[in-house]
Image (cartoon, rainbow, N blue to C red; front, side):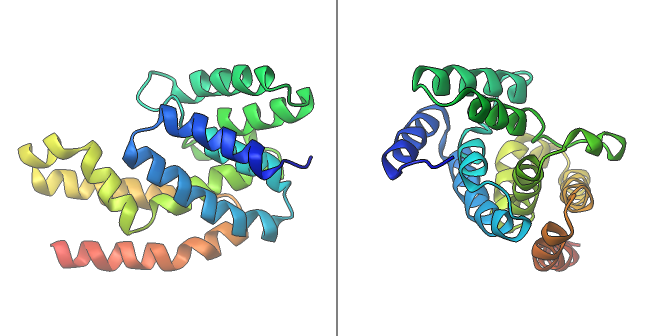
Length: 186
């Protein structure tokens, strides 16, 4: 499906109205990663771009993927997008969160894999470290060493859970940076 620049601007505006600055930055950086990965995986860019823009619109709420998927469905329906397109976007949002290894089979379409992987790849970056620190600031105050170790383990899990071969390759430099960074912290 083709989406116009005006439609993307409208979706961006909606996403921006729901996200605080750290989540917005994560979303915009995830979109940059997704654009490259979608091209490599031959995924439908329109579905991927809209899903990435809307994937965290309910961040901070319990079950944010499910709540965000419903919010996206309502928004896209009111804008009269094609129903198949809406359901593809909703599916990508539903399965974008970290999944255990035995659940990766839930991420079935190229588009969902790109959204899932791009979010993980984005988190394995300098900004990913900042985002983690922002979300766990009080933990650092209470136990710096334990929280630093948990942060490294969390970022390593993100790398380990990337599904696509292309995504793994895209993330390899970021993960090398993460490993070196944490060596410096010890």
